[in-house]
Image (cartoon, rainbow, N blue to C red; front, side):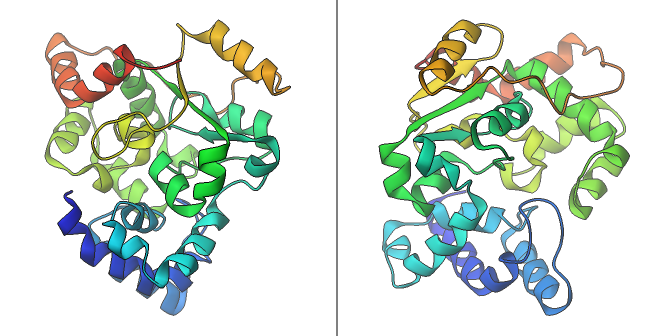
Length: 270
C-alpha cells in the first residue's frame, strides 16, 4: 500500500480511536456504536484487525503523523505496548509464529502483541530509539506450516470473528497460498503476514537492532538475553495438529510469496 493510499486509513484511524481504546489488539470486539465505528473503518481501509488501523496510521506521510492529532494518537497507541519496555530498556518485536509468546512473557511478564517496529517508532519514538530492539525470525516455509496448523485449529485458539471466518474458508494449504497471493498483507491474519513487515521500514531497511533466526542464532540469542538478566524462556503457544506435507509446487509458490523474508534472513544483523 503506497503512502498516498494511506490518507483515508489515517483519517479513519482517528475517527475510530475511541472504539479502538476498548478493543484489545486482535481479540475482543467492542460493542454498540464502538463496534459500528470499528467495522466502518475496517471496511473502508480493507484491514482485518482493529489495531491494524493504527499500523496504517504509523505508515502515513510525516505531515499527517506530525499534525495536532499526533499527540493524541501516540497516547492511544502506547496503550497497546508493554510498559516494562521503558524500564527494562528492551523493545521486543513479536513476529507471529516465531516463539515470541514465551519470549514476551520472559521479558515483560505479559504478552507484547504484534506491534511492528514502525508502530513502536510512531507510538513511542523516545523509547524505541533509546532501547535495545530485537526480534526473532523463522524459516518462512516452516513458519507457514506452523501458521497453517494454527489456523486449522481455529476452534481452539483465541481468534477474533474475522480471523475465524478466514479460517473457515481455508480447507487446504493451496487455499491459503492462493488467498495470500491475491490479498494485501493487511487483509490476512497476522500469522501469515511477511516477517519483514514487522521489523523493516517501507523501504525494506531493518529497523530493529538485532534479528535472531530460530534454530541458527540460538546461542547468540541466549547471550543477548543474559545481558539483560532474562532467562531463556520455555516455549509456549505451540501449534497443534498434524504437520502438513507441502508439495514442491507449494514450496515454490511460498518462496515467491516470501522472497523478501528470505532476503531479510540472509542479510540480518544479529
